[in-house]
Image 1 (cartoon, rainbow, N blue to C red):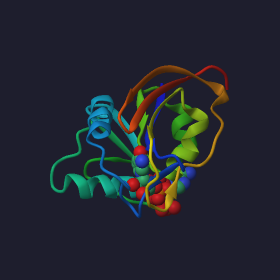
Image 2 (tube, rainbow, N blue to C red):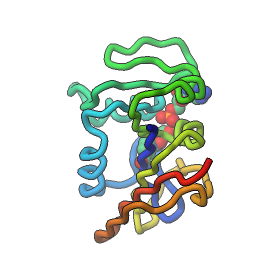
Image 3 (cartoon, rainbow, N blue to C red):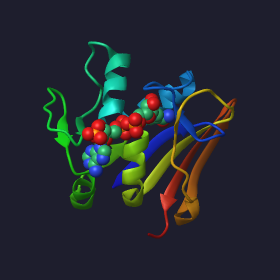
Amino acid sequence: MISMIWAMDENWLIGKDNLLPWHYKEDLIYFKNIVNQKIVLMGEQTYLSLKSYYKKKPLPYKKIYVCNLEDKTYDDAILVQDIHQFLKQNEEEIFVIGGKTIYQLALPYADQLYITYVLNRHEGNIYFPKFDLSNYKLAKKEVIPSLIFALYERVSS
Ligand SMILES: NC(=O)c1ccc[n+]([C@@H]2O[C@H](COP(=O)([O-])OP(=O)(O)OC[C@H]3O[C@@H](n4cnc5c(N)ncnc54)[C@H](OP(=O)(O)O)[C@@H]3O)[C@@H](O)[C@H]2O)c1
């Protein structure tokens, strides 16, 4: 099972340089409730961004895969150099947690999408690649001030 999780604003903005463009406490709590202690896959830039948030504290995941085309070793993560091969063969329950490049590459493999809609327009420079949700059905939706938490499940490929 492959799930993707991200937050985007009304312009599909997801990042500002290598950070989140906003601070919504409720979304951070939601993200942590879903993903902490799980197996995660992310790109090198997102990994560096998370490291800057967590400083010296260990990242709170059961297993970490980091995508990078370059040869690299991580003391807390496993390098993935070919994301397609990796996702095709995967038998684990994986959460894809960013960023833009990795969301785009992983989308064809995703069974579930956890999308937080930020009901606002923020400043930034990294956007989620536009795609069509017609292969997914809405399975859950929760509306709170400024945010909608939606879960979509794949209905066809
Ligand atoms: N709003 C949200 O929910 C959310 C969540 C996460 C991240 N973000 C934002 O997203 C931004 C980061 O996104 P990004 O696109 O710059 O970086 P990224 O997706 O985190 O990382 C991209 C990495 O993937 C590697 N890569 C490219 N093709 C690959 C392949 N076929 N197989 C394996 N690895 C491959 C690249 O390697 P090379 O460097 O060698 O090309 C690069 O190191 C930040 O602004 C962050 O804040 C937002």
